[in-house]
Every structure is written in C-alpha cells, then in structure tokens.
Length: 373
Image 1: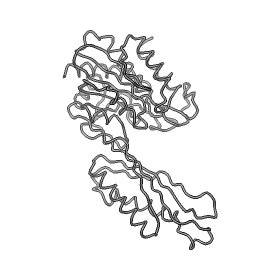
Image 2 (image 1 turned 120 degrees about the vertical axis):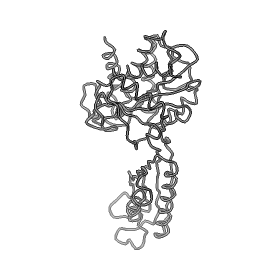
Image 3 (image 1 turned 180 degrees about the horizontal axis):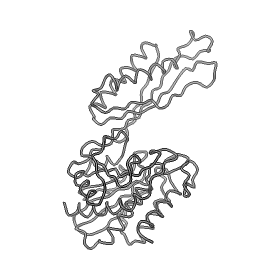
Image 4 (image 1 turned 90 degrees about the vertical axis):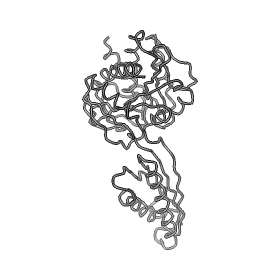
C-alpha cells in the first residue's frame, strides 16, 4: 500500500469513528497503535486523550500539531465511509488533519537519521471546546520546542493551494449570554406585565449597530446573536428571555471597546424598559497571531513543494492553536480542501487528494525548520 493509500485508509477509519472533545479514547488508541507500528516513539505525557510523539535526536526541537476531535453533528455527506456514531461527525476535517500529520511522521521517521534535531508531533484533543491546547501545554508538550506549525483545511480553496499570513490570522472568540427579566402576564393583558420578548427583539436590532456604527470600518468585527429562547405557550407573555451569541475580533482594544458598548446598550435598555438584563461573557481562544518570519518560511517551503501559495485573508473563526503561539513562535496555515459545503456543515466533504501532498509538505517543513534554527 502506498503512503497516500495508507493515509486515506486511516482517514476513513477515523471518519467512521468520530469522538467528541475530551472523549477521544478510541482515536487515541488508534493513533498509539499506528505510531507504535511505525516505530515512532510516544512520549509519556499524562494525558486522558491525545498523543505526543517524537522523531529524531538532538537538542533542536520543532513541533507539528493536528487536532483529533469531532463535532455533535449528524452526517449527511453521503460518503460510503460515513460516521457510524449517530449525531457525531468529523465536520471540521480534523480526521484530515490527523492523517496529514501521521503521514508527515512516517516521512520523518524514514529519514530520521538525517534530521538535524527532533520533531515533536502533537495529536491534540478538544480543539472544538478550546481546551485541548492548554492541556498539552500544561502537560509539558512544548518544553524545549523552538517553533510550532499546524494546519486547517480550507474548503473554499482548491486542492493544491496554500495560504497563510504573518501577524493576526484567526480571531478572538467570545461567547455571550443575555438573561432578560421582565414580568410575565396573560397575552390578552400585556399592560399588566413587562414584555421580555419585545425588549429582546429590540435589543437584537440595536446590537447590530455596534459593528456598523461604533467601530472603525477598517477593523474586523462580527457580533451575532445566534439563539433566542423565551416562552413556552401561545397565550402567555414570558417573564424572561435568553439571548446567546458570539463576538469575533482580531484586536484586543477593539474587543474591549465592543464589550463595553454592548454593556452600555444593555444597561440603557434595562433602564428604559424597567427590566433586568444580565450579561455573561465566556472567553474562547484569543486571536491566533503567526510569527511573520515563520509564516514566510512556511510559504516558501510550500512553494518549493508545488503548492500554489497566496496571502491569507483574516479569518473570523476561532482556533486554539493560538495558545501555542502565546508560548513559542510558529505558523498556522490553510491548505485547500475544495468541499462544496463548508466547515461544520453536515454535508462537509473535503477532497482526500490533499492528504498525501500536505503530509510530504509538513515533513519537508519540519526538516527545513530544524536546519533553520
């Protein structure tokens, strides 16, 4: 079996057996078996799920990272190797990322004797709930590592294409919950209550003005309300309504300005409607900031490897690879996967043709990065 065939077979096995964040027990066992069968050393970190391996010898160290968790989505891709777990799917392509970095590990093992140092290989759990990178850092997976590289497949780019950028790339991610408390009443006698649904509806509309009217149009901001929950029958005005959504930014000062403005708007509405509005913020990953030199280096190696390279646009998604880049320099890159449907869609179906070239690219990138240190 060729390298490409082996990696596709592994990818399909992972795709059929997806596991949610923090529950990647079978995935971890498979990875340990495949790495062990290839003679690749597994490092003894204290991890519930996830694997850290290493190839090579010497004092120099760089790292490659893949994420291994799936999403709570019912698959509708129609592929013959669809998920066998109801309600769970690799709808973000982490099975692709894992197979790519597995391939890189095999390539590096084959030329281990010529490596100018060590390549540490991180198969990270729990990217989707933004906890996995922190767990690996706490375990010591970055100890003595000088630089780190990772990837995400990009369904909007054709296979054979590559994109990255120095500086900010992926966004700060914040989740918010508004709890609006008015006064319930019979729907036929609204004057006896304080309609939380009317308040919530106007608040949703007002929040849309923050990005368009309170922030410089040259700054990237997304403020979206994604859930409204209130009431349980047709003839009662509910006492409370809950709104939930997300804020995405690339600059900390913009992030704080938007949060402050949101709080001002909520306080104004609460006063005007004689209601109570409580806001809870949940912090996700911070902005992913690539090291400019390593981003340029990764691009030059991609070009040498036959990829069509381009400068990436800012990405409003979140990515906990950002955690690693807070500790050591490195670069996160996009590799085209040409899916008709986007990330987190139940019909997401990336083109497996990207796997082998990407695996060979990351092996070459790791080897050349060791020489660059």
